[in-house]
Length: 255
Image (cartoon, rainbow, N blue to C red; front, side):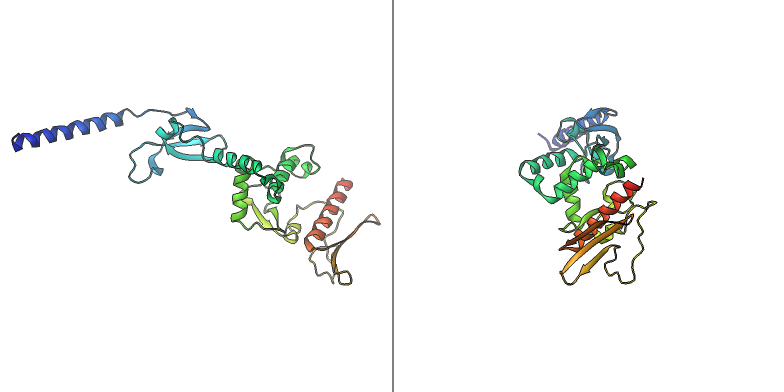
């Protein structure tokens, strides 16, 4: 074949390829409003498309409330079914199956849900009854809650604390603190219990002191001229917690 004919043939092949590409691009499948697994397509949005990729990327709304971006073809083929929450839930189930349900952190997560969603829970009136809830990310996945906890200072002796005591349990409003910090961050009430500290108080919490003779922390409380709490504890955190619970009981009796 003469060289000029070879060049012409190659150009023809290139043109056919370009025509094929253009034809393929014009046949974009519109999936707006359609649901795939937990994802509902909102609109095409290539702003989050990886560099070098030629696939059409879409904005999706997940059933859990999150927004995510993914390749339309991967979603249509079932390779991607959620924003990631489905993976977290499956991982959470594996954790429960392999004994994670016996850990302290799992107990904290389960107790948090009971306070917010179970009307029969003794603390529901102070949480779910007041409109306090849990973000979908945590509510649906222990794995997501555990991952956030580990990344944000969780360790033994600390408890989860809402920065805004009227806000929900969510990453932006929660922290892991000691009982002293949490006791000082309580919701303001018209309480029959005063928070004024004695001049010689060194614990920072009313009714909690250290007994040197016993080498223990002591939690005390009087209500309506009656001693309702007088117990000793090996740790400061336990004493503060018990004093706090006693105040809650008094508050409920005063209503």
